[in-house]
Length: 634
Image (cartoon, rainbow, N blue to C red; front, side, top):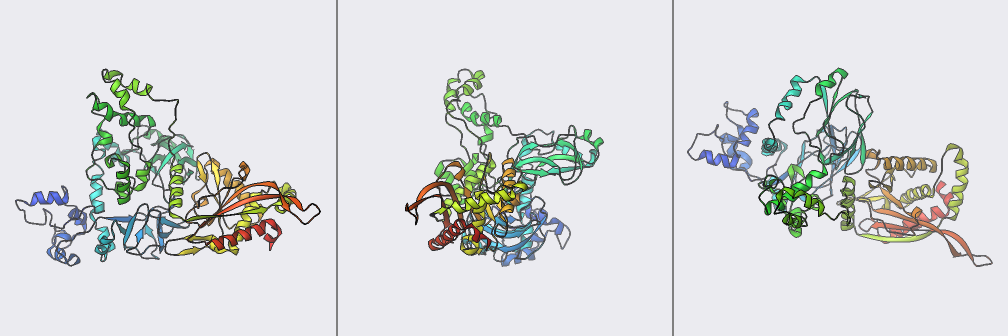
């Protein structure tokens, strides 16, 4: 990606040498002519001359002698499913020139599993669509569009083509910049990098795949296989915590586990990081006993971080720890940060050089600002007390921590996403709430009768099963509630997939009962029991909790009378179910009243999609189905 406005000029091999040319080229090419090196293999004309350096190319590039572009982002096609290799651009949700907010849907991409929405991770403007709608078999990592930070930059990409994107110096500029980072470490790792191809037996390197569309890194929770064990196709190899849930990672082919490269508990492992080595023959396992992967992810232990953060304070008083002080505060040159993230960092007083960017090309995004934990200022106090005796500095620092006052719990990837999504929902969706009381006497009686019938099949219907069915049928009656806000259109769904909120030890997750409008109560009950069980065990597959058109959240079993739930975007509604209780209600009898089982429900609606009268109409249909449950058969 072009971060600077580069000016095309001949490289040292294509232009006559001049006394001042070397300095100029060094400034523009940063030590090597990136444009020229990138295109050397495709040069035409005389041998050794690069196309960008030919006079006619320089003179006709976009009708200008000097070709320059504003700062921009080359957006590539991500892996939207674990087995995805290519994708089809089904539809673009944004047009050129449109503003893109964080979380907006950019495009719909058809993968090998389903059609998945591709969301934006930061604010920007759509400058150029490089791959038109309907394009099939787009490779993962292929450039599909260009985004810019400011609307005035859009016009500069009017004539930009995919050929120019392929020739962009972004890839070449960033490729050589990657090796210098590990260069600070020991020189021992490089030899094994070349050795696997020659000195090791045939083997398969298993890398961390994208187990959810928005996953950028994961945590290796547990290895299900040990080194030396035989692997069969479909065996569970490891459990990976993504930004959505903890998912089982299965083996695709038979073999033997020769080497585990990333230890259990390692957090924030980037995508495509080698996790383990698999070999075909058991006799080849011993050859990998001392195998080390170049750029292998170091087992990041929580204990290693505090000394690095505390070192700047220790180095401020004695000069005893200058070695550990630089890492957290070492300048990284120019810091790439989105405008929103920069604004938030200034408001919070964060030093951008201490924040590690997780966006494309290390760009700092709003998510990085939200999750950044600044160095605690409570550390200087013990450091000053320990200043006279640097040798015993670590002991006072540990002893001074008030262990009995609070405990810092690491934020899991799931909890980060829950926080981000719910905050986004409350900040961007105009919620309003409608409540109604429902007499559930008849449905409870029907449930009792049906459970006697299905008892022999080990099926036990719950009130929640009736609620899911009634919600699905109500969505057919009032389709506005079964819709999604897509920025440019309101998408009205023709099938009803009900998300059911399930509380797990890792956090809230909403598995999906697909096609709930056409399923029977026994089928719905079976689905809910299976999904809830696997959700608590962390064994859900991505397609089982990503998507849905309407959500039901039930807290009645905890004695909650009523509550208001937060909408799960891009859905338009979520139904909050309270507990049932006996109440006196007016009745046409001698006493003038009767005792009824009443349940309070609250519908949260997105006012952009569902108006108040429409939401009330949906609740009326829902109430009718539950109070007269036999009508669900019509």
